[in-house]
Image 1 (cartoon, chains in turn red, yellow):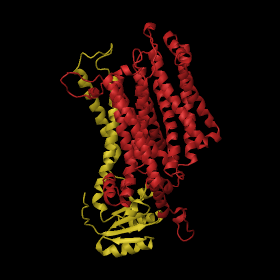
Image 2 (tube, rainbow over the protein chains, first blue to last red):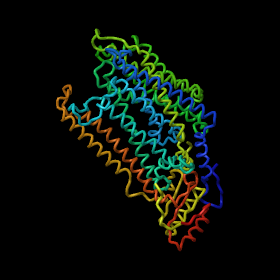
Image 3 (spheres, chains in turn yellow, red):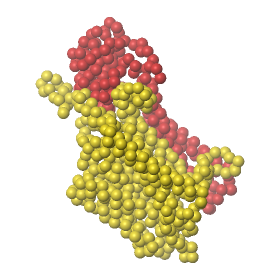
Image 4 (cartoon, rainbow over the protein chains, first blue to last red):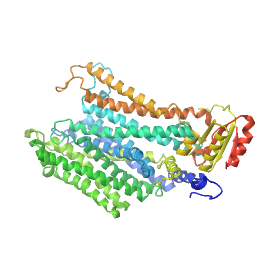
Length: 454
Length: 174
């Protein structure tokens, strides 16, 4: 829609009119103006999620009252569903950062329309993950023991423990992700401020932090955003590396491996990208933003999934090769147990879902079909969950002494709380994405101004 | 949060076209009107470079300083608290083993640097607030471009006329 007036004006070859930019504002803000049916459907979904996680919260309260005896957690497997869920949700959080920060640094302009949903997914996934160490703690009210403060017990935190690194990393990741998400929203809040009246205007006025869009502000904004993207890129790699060290620092066979950090980071990106597909495919329909989040964006995510899946498969093979080549019988036994032992279904499920299913994306017909991508994304999520559970449970169930071997079977409290965590995740995602522009408006306008095809 | 009164004099021109506001900025500079502020609904590299000279007070050094402070503070805090509890079980490692402390210090470095970056940006927005009251138009956040040119009262009419000639859809004198 760029208008050109050849001949009379030397600067008008790439004229960008206000109408073109306003159209972007109108289109995206229309997603926030619900129809009556849409409004009912939206709040019904939010209410259903609330109902499910409220039940899970009640089950958690019951678990606190009764103790872990009502769960399947017992010696030797004291890390079961809850720690698996923690690792899984932290992994989900990683792709939001990949899409918004890393692809920004690589100037992959196609990431713009999906960046807001990806960043929101990151924040909500960290919020979900952060529940599980507390749930796993049993005595949840002692969480404050993780905070270093002078106390009458005369104790300080053991900073040599990877679990303490984890607390520092997750807290930092949540705060920095929130700042990064909010920073990109400020120009959009200014637009909402200028288009709203009454109490909404007052709220958006505070949220916009006095943004007026001067060239000087934009200079600072770009400088700060780029810097923040660099910081968060370093952070994202460190956070999941630290999560992997929760395991790799232990001498448990199957955990004590130097490839765990890159292996976990790759796995996190794989699960996060597939969750992004799971959210974006129905999300673009419900929010009416198909003109912005197109089949090309879904296809590009699918291509990234193929690349990351190959890295994850390489890590699987490397682990098995190390176990076979090494002279540690315990490690060899642990990996043999994964392939043919009690938890073999988890191994094969994760291998098929994480290594085979993404290969179907080599076919353009699969990459360009939204429903096929949606089904594949669900399968990959399932596969990544199985992989996390397999790593944690299979190694703990068969450590060094055969007399202390055991098995783990989750009971109804774990299943309910796991389901509740999914509802908690969707609840917050819907609540947030239904109240902020789901596509970064200012970034989309920038793409138009700079002549990029976002 | 009431807007402070603006005690300056000048012209606020509204443009519907990016190229025209760029031409207006260049023209104003050529005419010696250097106290100007351009408005855009999104980041535009060319407009930013043309209308806003690089600031002496960049964000980078500020963030770096905050990050360095966070790194040092984390190391001091972890070493000091560990020394307060010398009976800690360390599994054969030295009591003050640097690798685990560096992990914590790195996280705090990132936290402080990011908080400083966001804080600096917020300060820039807040510091622009007094200007926004009279010298702003809600269309600037939507799709229109703007140019505020500060000038003596005697030149206001001439500047407004020039802006009209350069394609401004509206000129407001303040």
